[in-house]
Length: 319
Image (cartoon, rainbow, N blue to C red; front, side):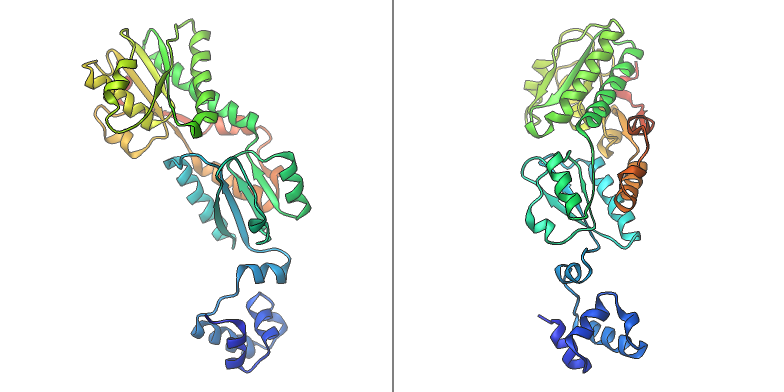
């Protein structure tokens, strides 16, 4: 494995010179020496280690994306992709770190001396203090804000179903414990919106989302007409398939609305009505906060996010 000593030997310079040139301090040397060292490094396939560069600079060009133990759905993947692209344009490398539980920051991550850290799950005050002590810009989603956003998504679903004439509303959630922090807020939002409109609410459908489970899901469906606000598109498709298996008319007897605007939502029959969240604005604001500080984010983050939420009409609620 090529190291800086190999580059130094072939270029006929000191190892310190190689380190300085390849870590962004080439302005201290003559241009022909910089060109020589960079050419030798390319020829030998040598790249400075992230840890070494961080040690030399005091910080690295790495930004950590900290993912808690949740399902990596299509919208979250798209959000991460867009954040990664915008960080790359700013000369930063996005390093994704998976956590077995909630947001957990280990010393191995901190040893990289990251320039910033974006956590999908809320950080604790102690974690914020530790990152501030190390000079790491930290961006996360406060629990209260996340609850507000998910509650509003559920409310939007219920209001759509009520507007389509469904006489009762029920929520549908996956049993997966990883989804519960988000799912419970969406459930509550749907039920609250229905009650505010004077519409009856029916018991929540809790789905295993396993292969071959459509018959058991069908048994959960109420006998009456109902609009179902599903946690996401996967849950919505499971409800719709179960209803069709049981001979129920979709959207006549059972209306279903999901969340995420996945590819599958548009190619199923009938197509699925779903809630779309424009992640482009969110990604831009996350990157701006990582580069400029959290104070650069909109003053009313909830209203900013709510403006990005829209209904994609499909056949599953077209009464």
